[in-house]
Length: 268
Image (tube, rainbow, N blue to C red):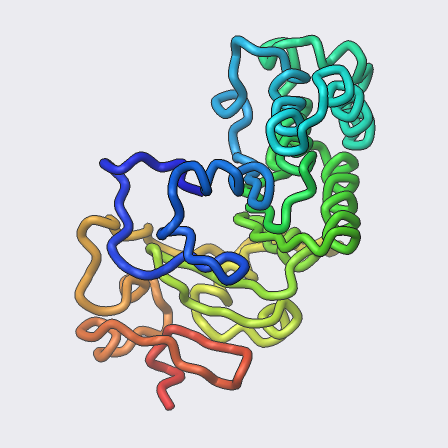
């Protein structure tokens, strides 16, 4: 989306292909027409993402005024409708309030409305339900799924919540230390996880059972991203580590056409 300034951020290699266009070759003017209109993002922390000097309604309505050419009054009316849809109480009042006047959950819902109001083709959702209670979480997920069907919107969900991934994602990518460690369709990943890290994550999910069961934990900690080991980054924490793991970085091995895993245990 071109939101990270360069420096300090930089793109070393690769392409960002969207609808047949490499976004890295686009001018800032072209990106500004795509950002918030065709590609939107829900940030994890709404308090630092919303502008504290503007009302919540004006920040949301701005997208409609810029990208859809609506008048301010019409844009605010549409904003109120969406505030109501995502469960913000007294929406007519909330559009005139500032972010600090809203609870964490309501601020997060404002961010969700801001991301969805132009009906983008791609939504990047970074922990979109972090500050919401379970009931509102379910409503937001249903709203995302509904819009996904109505406008053909693709969603990239960034989350630690594996249950949420299973609910909304067709494919799941498990990442560790900045690399893809496993990728598979969601049902296959949950029924047949291959990488020891993925297995460890699934074992750490609490289960509703009559008896008390101690949760499984992954020992150790994530390595320093500026000083990664020579071999597999998960080596020091892996219960199935081998000598080759310490010396050589594994590649992504394909166990079938839809399931890949970065682990020497699955070398062809």
